[in-house]
Length: 102
Image (cartoon, rainbow, N blue to C red; front, top):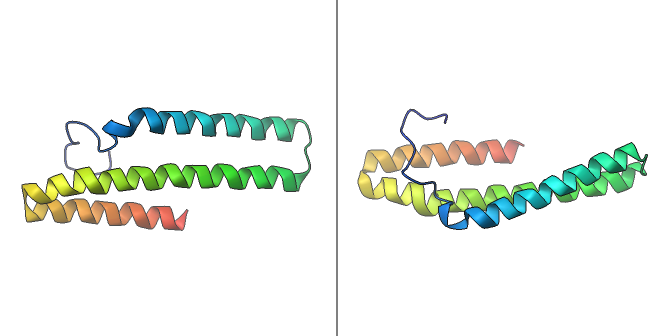
């Protein structure tokens, strides 16, 4: 955890945890497929196409986690106090900036 605050009792994605894990397992399989493609000397453009698909899939996971964070963690903190809400907004803003740069 990169913040000084204690984590919530359960993460914002608790209700979608199974779906998130399913998506990540699918992405893991795609990455293994990429390794096979390289091992089998697959044409580079085909490999790049698959890298793009994996990247989009990871971005979708990131956006889903961000949405859950905003809907749960930020809203809960805002209900707690203005200061706690602002801290969570700042945290989310920094996370968004990292996602945009990646």
